[in-house]
Length: 378
Image (cartoon, rainbow, N blue to C red; front, side, top):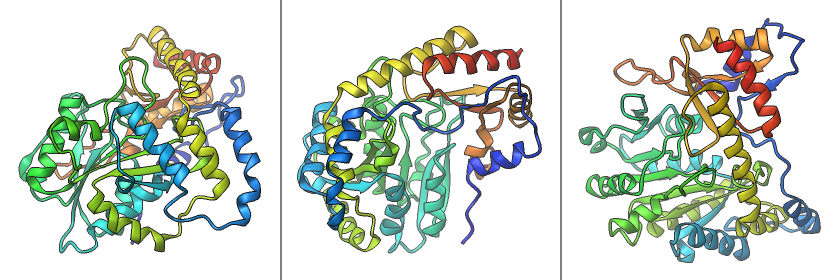
């Protein structure tokens, strides 16, 4: 079983031997990890419940956590889920890796499709599942939205979308998501939307695939699942709190499978996460910072930014050389887009010629980094 090095490993190799300009303090705009303090009420809850470390957590999660997550889905998306339509998880990375292995296990020659560029766990899951991969390229020509080829989709057992998208920051509308729900029913594949960036928006709220399922009349969420996480929403990736929700028939077997995986969340983390999922005030505060960062990027770089995620997908002449020069001359790290993508069957890598910039710092520090980037682009 061979896995590709992670993008950050490739970046380390790319920058190896380069001495950054000591005139600048180091700034990294590479990883999608909010650099703000985790809200105090979350930290206090974690400390308050630390004595519960003496107890084994249940794989299914505590009722209060699952209720809090379903409450979030209802208040945010207007979708009222039944208890058997949501499973809490130890973050979403583990689900994205092990759910495809569970779901594709009994398929004779499994086929999996996902957006390209992508979160590398999708690829790892495909490798571990021995699945053939169809890349859904996101390009400037298609507005960074996946082109629909029904002949290819008819071959698929599992399709993973990621909207709002990492790294392109594109969004699918309710109607566009609804088209994908209809395709999942027509061609009988399981459709997942990775919605980890759903709460990072600066204008209109971003729709969920669950909303789209109801919108097209698929009220049982047949073949439809969403994944979401508290990491970006609450600046708390260390809480490892996420969920998978949707088709109860699919989730029934997956819930049993998870009892063997051993990814139960510690009880103090569950208590803190339940409070975070139920609170919107701290999320609003974080969104204001991201909005200010995007505004600064528009003014300093003279570009149009997305209304969602905290990423800029910036076109440059040679991403590898530019990344090296940016580090050497300005002590600034970004991530080349080709590290986040692969060549599809036609030999096209949609990440070539782009860099991903994560605006996850406080605004003053972000402005500092953007001014360096502007100088480098000159």
